Image (tube, rainbow, N blue to C red; front, side):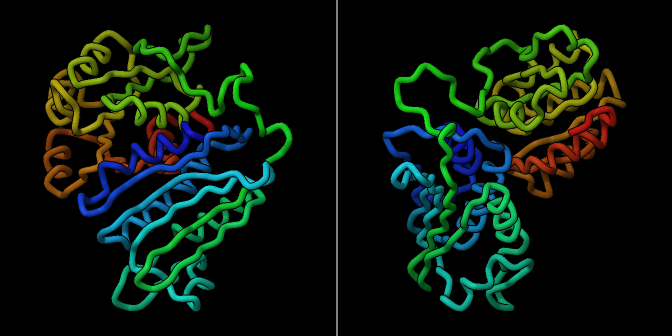
Length: 296
């Protein structure tokens, strides 16, 4: 669970205003869920997005706790505007809005409720207007989920630990489409790698210069290009690659998707955008739009 929380934490940290203290809490005892890591990431991200939306100052905390080795409880606590008792019974309904003057939670929390059902979990909220909210997801721990500390087993989900540019080495890689991910933050790359799985041959560039070199030396089918990177940024990299090819699909990924960024990227020849925090469903759909042979 620590790995999943760290991924969600790093994905959202850059979006947290300076007026809010963002923290993560985990117990000393480890629990490993043999479960769908992508759904867990989506579940936590949706709740955290909601906390950020309605918290102007104070603190937001994500974490998990263990209840008598029977339940693992994921939680997101905030010091935001809070929710009345009456509204707490409605917020998981599709498109519910607190009032006509504020943006409601929309589909995010109803999706969370649906995901929680997949895990046979309960999702609850405790809140008081003006004092903040705490969303919690209680997931049953099965016997094969729980692994004592010190036991020599790998933690799931399993992320690659090597730093080679080509992260896939099996004999069938030559038959797969090749996807180049240009991303300088390792946790962001690992999240994308987890979402995509082994359906593509994946190349990893940590900056624009490496992306150009990998593109020139490999048969790349699709590029996911981060706008903000060291040494050479995404826009400059995009322009350089477009000198060699006007056909290769290039999807810009960014947490700073202002209209000016989009206009510049579109003018430079980008194919589309993926905004952070990463939504696994959108990532898969975007890739399938350009590589039809992939079946999720």
